[in-house]
Length: 151
Image 1 (tube, one colour):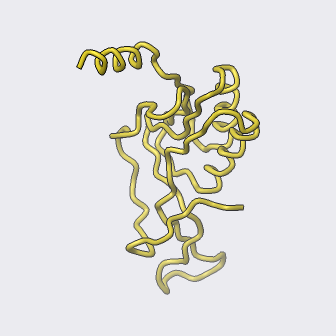
Image 2 (cartoon, rainbow, N blue to C red):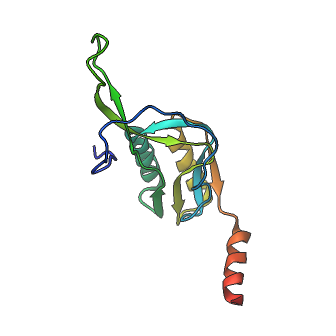
Image 3 (tube, rainbow, N blue to C red):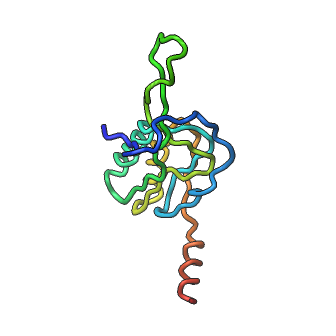
């Protein structure tokens, strides 16, 4: 299974950190017509991202186009079971992505709304957070095009 993880990092291990506030960016659909938006703050692992990706691609039967808007860039370390305290921080167990509420995680295009909604529902079941199906506002797209034509 080809998991997402960074090729190279500046530091091997990181602090746990906290997820405060709402998403500062990536809260709008930029590529597709439909998307999956996070409603809770949580760490999503590379395995969960991969499981959601597979659920979407299998339901859509490789039709249309899909974008993954999140990347696991946080190393999560863990000490083995039954190991005494001390002796440093544990080895990296998996990679995760810190998700803030409002973040768009997946986008799809080139499929009808019924298939997109079902695919996103299946993907949301694989993730540890509450998610919402979002669709692009058609009028905002038309306004952007009309502004471009006026220039």
